[in-house]
Length: 526
Image 1 (cartoon, rainbow, N blue to C red):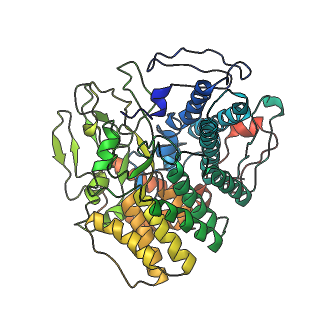
Image 2 (image 1 turned 60 degrees about the vertical axis):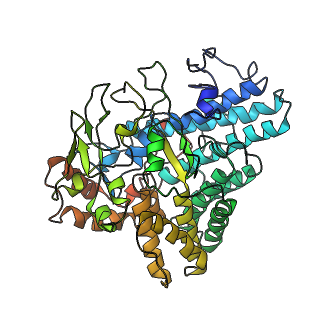
Image 3 (image 1 turned 135 degrees about the vertical axis):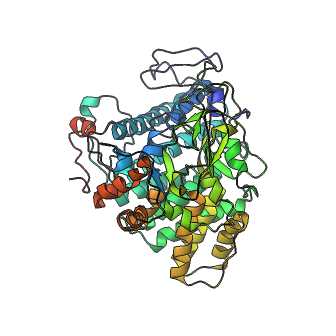
């Protein structure tokens, strides 16, 4: 990215706490070992440490691939376009020893520990501007809470680690009850509201800023309101409060072009006219240029592209395709349909080949397209494509949902929000709906707007309908005569067959249970 606010172009930290490796993006000095008592001396040290906390998101184990795609982008609207996946989360055939679960779990707790080390030491650093100190602390606290939220949302009940792990032999910790953990996360994030930046980073989506905290708070509160913690109305009201704070800030708008934000994410640009992308994971470099993070975005997920030459449009395995349920959600005039389910592939000569009418579910995720990347030459497997974690369209839909739930019926503001999203898509506005009809509409609208963005599975879980959505709805779809007969399209049927109630959450990894003697397997996997 071109912005000077890019956290990864300020510094490049691969790991911090007992070790920290530098990279050559800024020709920063590499460190083989950093002890807290000799580091954390000034603002530069603390900024480098903060980059280490952010780094967790850019790991392949988190948003580079495993959490964003393998753990989170399989649901009723998207499926893994391969069959016979054994012991795999993408097929719900995994067990507690699955390595993808372990790598993600370990990475998130590493990020939490990095945040704890920074928070333990920053008050002793020489930082002349106390606002800078507060901002760094606010970002670290927020990221620590956010990583805990990803764990709670994925694994149900997990240990909340508020202190640095200094000795693994005495670090065993039992899981915090689900609702209690969420309330702690909400309080932590609320504490950050007046600490994080509220001006300088307005056009820098790689940084946490106030509207990001507010938007993510709305997401956490919606989870707390629904299943399985059943917090209800007070949390729907909180969700509406924080989503409306973003709405009232006027700092974000919907880009009239539904493709523009995605093209910017792929092409190493910040889209700053509308700032629809509020928060995104920063990926830089191509590996072939000697610098890189760990993005597989556009490669494992993205439109099918078959040219593996570095000088071509880019190669994509295209593991993720849209289901018939997703296809049927769209009107033919909906501008989002061909964005979500690309109508063509690129062959090995970079020529567009249109999908046929009987190949609806062979269409791959079109939001991430390597043909939009600006880098050359392109690495076959790793990309510089950023991954959006929060965008304004999501905030509008969260606000509409929270208003409807809190008031047991859609308010004028709820209609304004959902119609803004629908109008941008080129479909009819709505009015005069009942509570139940609006609830169904908002759930469908979230699917149309936010598919393939690591959100749908968790929406289904918090609505209490994950099992039904997969076993019944997707189960019927894979038996529809319109479902593709291609072998790899059968992967969805295997996902349906393997799904049970326990699959709404992930099992705590065997390795963790072997080390943390106070931790028990969550109730879904006992």
